[in-house]
Image 1 (cartoon, rainbow, N blue to C red):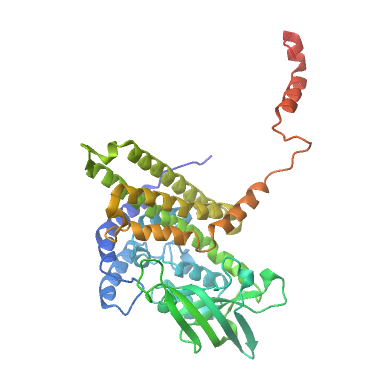
Image 2 (image 1 turned 180 degrees about the vertical axis):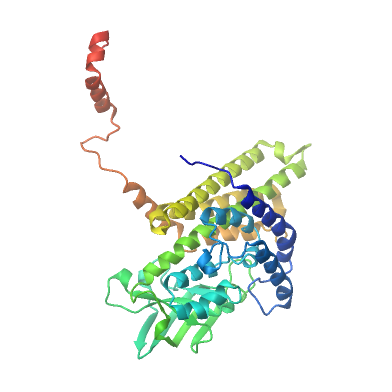
Length: 432
């Protein structure tokens, strides 16, 4: 039986290098690079590519990919350990070539792209030469993709796309979009949509506005509100089968949800570190905050929550590595998707409280981390939807009670036990 909570020394040395590199090189870049996706920014272009070169030299570029795609095939557990380090830094995912939404889009192209699509879109994406956009959600759709109305109609050798998409991640910096649109309106609900690659320079793509979350300047957000106005793309830009968009999406979203949770572990750790540093640094009424019982409770509860999340995420990653099938780990993925935003929210709120007024200012990263916890509860499916998924899988493992009372009913269990041990009880004269 194999059971090990240790990382082999060779990979641990890489993790140690990554932690030192992020702390001393990438985190300072976070403070001067406004947007790591913006290649038009000369500051970004002067700082990020040399950092990426260092990562490539160390062999840690795009390690989420298998060897057939230019990665190292480290697997999900090792990726989780690395993502813990990257999660607390804005620029780190781009510096290490594992940023969303590109990781998920690369996986879709690898699974469903033709050789021509891979050469045109996947190869430059994996090389870090371009960025991509995932354009699925719609304003009226929310967490119900069966309500999507964007259509793609086949006209000769071209698909014609019309409709609106909401929260299209990284639309303003993308070279191509991965778009879901209804192609088979008469099919059953989950067989109506298909997935496409849409070049960003296609005529008819209109970014209505770039939507920001709380704290971001208007018009500078990373989530595009996009309108497709008779956008024409080649017939061969279909990913997978007609009507198979939901199958394609689940391949993409499974990995994306896991990677979000991995990075969240790093954010939780950072919030906990800030809280503990403040607790031993700040004094009130003659003693440090760390000696106050309420602060001690905050620290203890945060430490417990951090390690519970971390172990569940790594266990899920381990299952994916073993089973090589996101579908078979669907319940586990739903669980970490539920837990990650909850733990991040609770730990960050406690960290804000320990920091007092400073905690609610923009002079600490806690406000942005709190907003991140709210975003995580909605991105890639709301937590409530994942609770339904998890609950269904959990109860599916059980059988109904065979009789009127539950199997834990003590009178029935006691009667069965007395019947089982009747000879012993009569021999020793025990009362029944």
